[in-house]
Length: 115
Image (cartoon, rainbow, N blue to C red):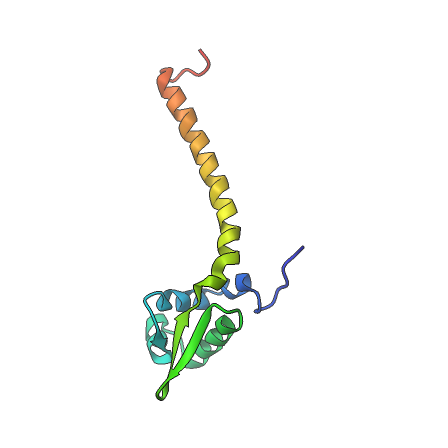
């Protein structure tokens, strides 16, 4: 079944390079909007819009602290993305292992296969 092309989709949310940059900025811990703006070098309205999208899909959480709002990662919602990427990682690793086995076999046989 095809995924819906909406911003309520984790895959779509991380498809935007600005949102990935915001997630990267939050790897080191909670940040205010101002700190995120400095980290990703985009304007406040865009940062706020991207934070809203990331919040809607559950990748970012926020809390009030005094006059500020602090944003942090909610990495448990990355699991669907991780699961999907892991399939490809396993397939690529299997192929690399087969290539490695083939090269070792070539070395054992002096560059001549099948003797």
